[in-house]
Length: 194
Image (cartoon, rainbow, N blue to C red; front, side, top):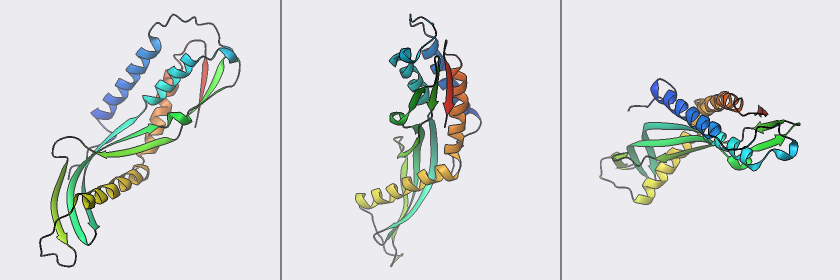
């Protein structure tokens, strides 16, 4: 089975560059707003929206082709599955607090790790199905049994995203990129907290 590299050569670099460029365009596009120092009352909804968009752009995409071996209702299954996943952030829990006349603190929200079966053709292929008690007899799985096995696989992959360090590295990359992006906002000091 081929395991796509998550953090490595071209893909991660391309995704990171695109995210930085998109955020820079959003931030640097003329808005007609003045750049006077902000007071506690003038940290506007527009500024909050810019910050929220910067955090949203820090999602990490994961592509993985993996094998699935499971037992459901006394039947074994072996299949290949292509998964797409994301490490993104719960924007509902994003905290933006004023900490002075022209300073705010942005607290990076909890991450959300999601995996789904890929929608590409041939992303799911059953290699073998067998009856556990009688392995030489033919067996088949219902759609419900296959979905149970896929649900278990997704749950395992979500746990592995933490164990393999994907989430830790995604948070570190987001923190580094956001610090650089926040430094481009005129008239405002932004502190990034965990």
